[in-house]
Structures are given as C-alpha cells and as structure tokens.
Image (cartoon, rainbow, N blue to C red; front, top):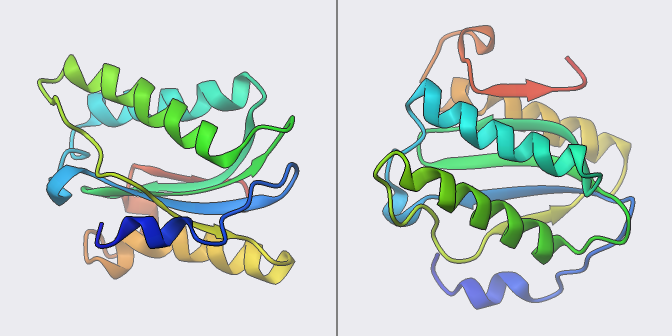
Length: 148
C-alpha cells in the first residue's frame, strides 16, 4: 500500500464498535479464486468469532482482497485481530503453495451510525457485482451478510 503508515493516523480500537476493513493480497495477486482455499480463509474468520473476539456482519472475498465488516468484542484491539487473522491465514496458505499472502497494512473504517453500518454492508456484498465478476450477487459464492 502506498504510504501505509498514513493509514494508521487516527486509528482507534473501540470495544463493541463496528469496523469495515479491507485487506489486500501481496502484489494484488489473485489468490482467492479456489473454493478450497477460500473455505480455509472463511474458516479463520469464523474461528475469531467462535473465540469471541468479534462478531462478523458481512464479508466479501474478492480475487485479490477481502472486505469485512465486524464488531469488536471483549476489549480486543483492531490491530490484534488483523495480526491474528493475517498470521493464521498465512499459515493455511502455505498448504496451497503461497508463501507471501498479504500486503503490509490494511484499510479500516470505524462505522459511525446505523445508516453507515447498513450502507457499508451493502457496499461489501455488491463488490463482486461492481467488479464485473457476476451479474447477480447471489451467483457469487464468497460472501455473507447477516442482513440478507
């Protein structure tokens, strides 16, 4: 990411608040195209929820990045969640012959209110449609949203 240190300016981690994050693959490589690989990525997302670090609202796994909206729980810090998720998925990806999965840094957005929450979730699930990957969101297999 260009000048990723600037992304950290003003970053806060607030328990019980909602965040939307974007994680990008190393060199924007299209790693997220395999059903088996993407299932492993989703499994790691679900594990963080089972461990009560977050509550996932929406995600979309695009070929070279992930959009994910969740609520932080239990005084967990956002950088801890991202570090844990990136680390776990980096270990899993080695089974698929990928040795550098993630670009440094990430983009985050603190959700301001309920309208922002819903609009951001819509943005996330419509991403495959805007990217031209499918003509109907229901045809894209790598997304989920609690509002739909």
